Image (cartoon, rainbow, N blue to C red; front, top):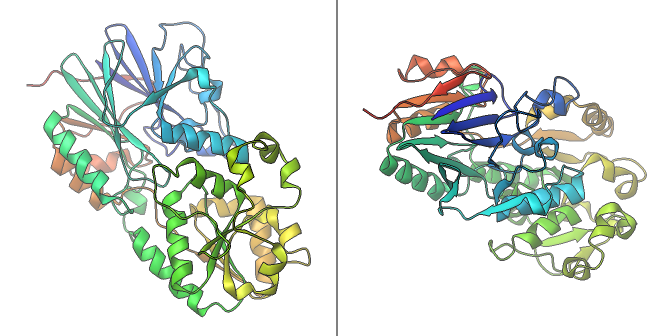
Length: 424
């Protein structure tokens, strides 16, 4: 049994990991690198049977979650390779495809994982284990073959709204006795000293900001980040405002409605939905025109005029493309805008333009974000609790950091197989 990091051993994003044994090959994630997502760098690693024709066949691709830096290259992979994912991740991919033009995975390629239930692919037994991350239904993977056990964390954190997931992951890992841990280290090294804001602390921070704000308030966050939706919803309620979402967020809530107890937009509740003009003729509107969701879209709908007339009553999920029809006369004076993404996105031209317009109107941008990735102290605690026999850092620019405190840590070289040794 051996593991090959095709990409991700010395960079964040673009993760692509191969595990091979006795003629069987599986791939863990096939992500778009952040550099390519911003128009720089190569797209696909040279993985035979996945992106490059020839070589031994790939038995399956396992997707940890629906963020593009882990899933963005699946559509470019060989069409005969099945893609295993949870039902929740399948739904997030569908929503992202319909509303944000993200790549789709054809249904005939999809195989559905049930968290905690092992599946057999070739010589491998693979079990999906839930983790807390900044997208719905993220998973770690336990991979077993030859009597050896590998745990791939995917992306995870310990400061979100679901601490029970972390406790369960530790419990399973300790019981299995992990031979090799593939662990994400996004915040290792250079970012180690930054504060570790929890979702609950973020909620209180935003609520405090909203109580001071007197005019328009805008929230910029991903509709796929359901925990962040809950954070903004609770902060808005605490500050006496109504959260206004868009059809994208509303569709996500519809998809997971049976799994999560979350409010739906209603005329008298804490949540409303703002439907863009001509939405029915848009790509998303056309694709969903005859669905049960579309028939209920008008429930809780609010008009843009009401938001403009009573700006102090609402917190609006916002993106710059909404400005021409929501604020046709320009951004309102002295607006408060919460930016709740990775701050690197602010370097994109469209966001730089928006921030300049916000500044010109006397508005203020608040960077209000809780990371989707574990703090270094939490990662160290996690490793000490499960005591893996060896550790390979992934999803990090600082793999050498691990070796300073964990003697069995080894940085992988892209494309070079690393054997997983038989337990002593």
